[in-house]
Image (cartoon, rainbow, N blue to C red; front, side, top):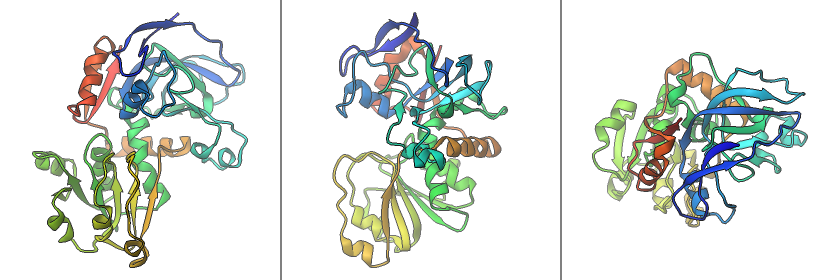
Length: 333
């Protein structure tokens, strides 16, 4: 039996829960979980906020661990390897997207949380393709949130060829936004942080932000003019998107990685005026997660983390719910 922490019904505290160890398929590996981050998506799963949860719900998808068993046809990993596992635990491996290395576009993905029991457990299983080998000099104790929050803000760098010549604005400086600052600054970009939180200025400047602006101060935002090549929004609340579009240069882009539930209210004229674009993306493919981890290892980039023991999981989730964690929470056994 495998020990875990599960929500037995929506919105309730997690309790100890044991489930049977399932046999591996020929292409799966079994991972002993060393640590697991807590993402806001885990809270959404626990609360059944998206209507897709089943209970008991064992969440957790920012997993760092060690392979302890492999299926008979596994070629990519060996027992004893230190690995990571993020949002996806498997793919069809035969569609055009999988064959092109864009596994995250596969329509038949398995989710580490919704398709099975996730990382708030002693062990987790996954298809070998979704399991990420970790660079040897990566600091494992803080690396878990890179597998979801990190790749979410790193993917646009690859998709849109962001480089040192671009002026970047990061809207919302929390678990995603603070990593975006670190990534884009490491590229050599000029980075402006837009935040509604007071008292973060010095901290954000120390992380690499060149400027810090209130995301609620319309006059201050408007004063920038059409300066930015790329604005990345990490927030889950509605803002004045036409205002932000007005400070984007011609051919620039407003890109959403935060799950805003309200419709995006944008004037067509805001787009037509400078041939501006609006886009969005979730996590990323295994090949890009590997690129991100190499980048993080090279530039010594990690999330700001608060550590908790699994036995204190409800305390940690409460802090995440109340936005009192700066900036990511990580559980360990």
